[in-house]
Length: 443
Image (tube, rainbow, N blue to C red; front, side):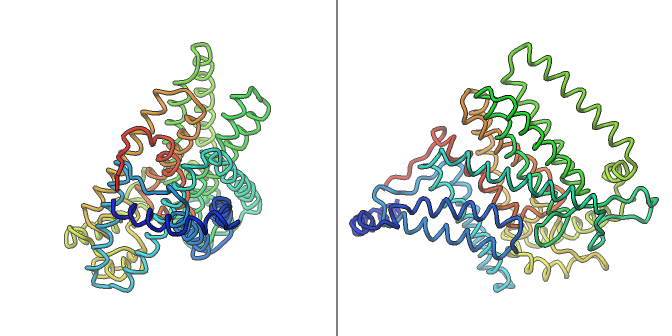
């Protein structure tokens, strides 16, 4: 591989500098700090400021690759599909009719993928830090959940039209919390909590391995508190993602239980499901919100999305091969030529349709193949092994499943608060399952 040849030559030239430099000897710690800062800043900082820490981490990783002996790139089969996706996006940007807007969108994509590469190169040599990274994410989501309860107690007012209340009685209007994430939006907050929720499982399963049952019980409280916070967002896409996460989590947990505990677990799940069902039925605001999912065109939010989908499909038909170029500004300018009057939109409200519209159908296929490869390897590892790594993979898989289901009806996936969590989870899968289906790219 040409790139590894370049790295080898650079490392040979700079190895003495690496050996003598105290900073370079501690460069992994600096990368680790930047990963944690990305997680922490996601809860309070503006989108552009979150990316600054990711960029710092990328720069440090490049310095590490150029100076530390024996560092090299190694691609899995899944990574090959991601590389194909990146190349198609690059070609799509070059061919965009709005090059400047598309280039800005491409820079964001480059930062996300660069963060993934940086994270993988750090974690592969520091697998013990996976636990602490997930714990940091768990602490962030617990604090945000507490803030959500506080906002619900205050009955915060909606900043914009977040709910169709035209057919609702006053008692059926739901208070929708939005946390501290910027920009304030309950759908973004719901998507963030959904992506980060599985990290709280670290507080449940790791203590169980050491028979610390009280600690595990506290972790379970954190998990259900974060789940309740998702309900308080009123984000219906997050509701669907939460359901998917629960089902997947139940299936995986059931797989590892002994026969006696399987019966107890089944009973607990049944009782919990019954309680949730009656909670929805008995709470008028929550009932109205959940049932509006199935209202189709009778709900203005649903109808709006259907109109956007229709316009985006027309855009895709006219830009089938390479799309219109990436970026929300680019999307909005082109979408204006196809939209139905009165139905302006910032995105396609479906991440799969968004990828296809922006970069073409082949970019979507490459991205889906990347996901399928990682998910397949993850499932194969989970169901064929019994070790602590299974817990980390379960967290990652449950998180990704929620994000992908939510993405069917919303595109908050492209916000950095969710994107960085997604790439952290993908990176965990990539590193832990690296021995399966690995492709070496030799010099």
